[in-house]
Image 1 (cartoon, helix red, strand yellow):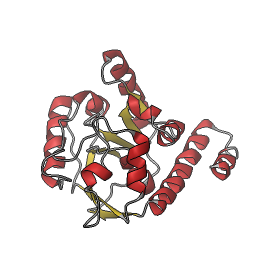
Image 2 (cartoon, rainbow, N blue to C red):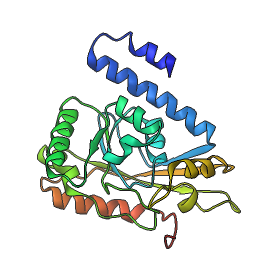
Image 3 (cartoon, rainbow, N blue to C red):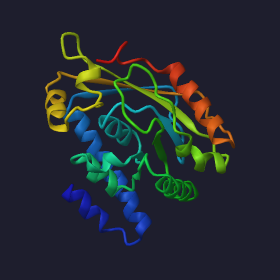
Image 4 (cartoon, one colour):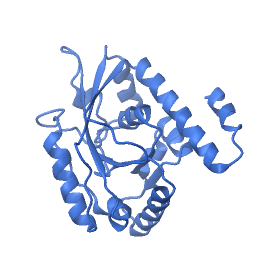
Length: 235
């Protein structure tokens, strides 16, 4: 990160610094995936930049997987800001954190998202607004899609799933981060896995709707239809 930080200083304009940070974040993310022996399988055609992409959410590794694929901005729950290392770096590259309990904060996030769209940024949104064990895709929060609906912006979608080797702890316990799992213990067990397979499956075409609830419903149906469950039943 020191080298990446040095690179950032070469860009005098704020937008240049942000872009450099995202590229550095991408390099860091790819290094982390190699360190953790995560092999990423990409199915379907990734969207061309600039894009607005919605995905399901299984844990902190999701951000690393998507960051390794594209230097995008993320929209994530406020708690992500407090995650060790990932939270700090996510904030550094302009992640928009949302307090799920505050309507006022949701309005702020929508305005920031609108600005990101106008600036031509690539954006990845975890529309469930929380992570899960991966038995199903949780309902999408329409508020997180307000900016796209307001602009009638086509929204791309992808599903994310994980797999661990036979004989290893199952992915819903060792990779997905949900419930009351503690970060340190989870990361320790995750790092001991021989390998992890992350499958990112892109949808065939984007979805556009001016009504955010309808947009959330259509995207949820689309992601659910192609999602491979990590576990049949959580627990």
